[in-house]
Image (cartoon, rainbow, N blue to C red):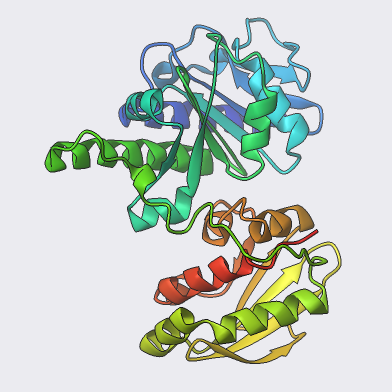
Length: 336
């Protein structure tokens, strides 16, 4: 990466820092931002800097081990940032900040599942990770939570998001803060302080009667998916009401295996191996395993770019209800 590219990344960090400040997602001298330059280097904000008033000299070049390559003191959250880059090779950016509504929410709750459709699709279930020190010193539980969601809350502390660029990270932080704010407002309107978003668990943590586990992307697994879909009365009703007629293909990145499900009014009438379909969802093995084992919602994985969706997202959104039911049924076919 040449000097001009590094300069542009510094300017991007400054812009995102100012945006976080203007949206009241950061205050004082809390929060830190970093981006990956290459396998061995990152840019990271210095300690004791205000993200809303960053200068280029406040953004330091450092090694992936957290050693400064320029004069200055790196953020005391360097362990958090460098650990994320080491464990998630596709991650290019990290934002950590102390958002007030999210912080307040996670003082009282262990997870957040938004009741607002857009936030639910974008965030999924956000976990609160226990923190006992002012700076993150035990990164293992944070890294574990980040395997299934690109944003986690650090209880008594703040939030951290990761992504392919800083704007993706910013959107996650903003969406979580909005979800926490809506939850607080809904409690005021309802005058019921016991009401929380955790009451809506209709599509998370579902138990399954299927104890058998299937080989990922095996014909046996696909056959069982088809059987469950076509035998499901709720999906049959939803598919007919929404006239869900389309071809949805799924692809395993490592092997290139593809299965195209041909739907007519919510029923699967044919399965082929053609990836030239109206909609194609592709992902690596680790993400597909997480989906089939109820660890991550496919809609969330798509919006967070863990899965790649080819097709008109606006069009598939009108089939949100039947697609959600399909994805629920997927989790009844767990993988080995």
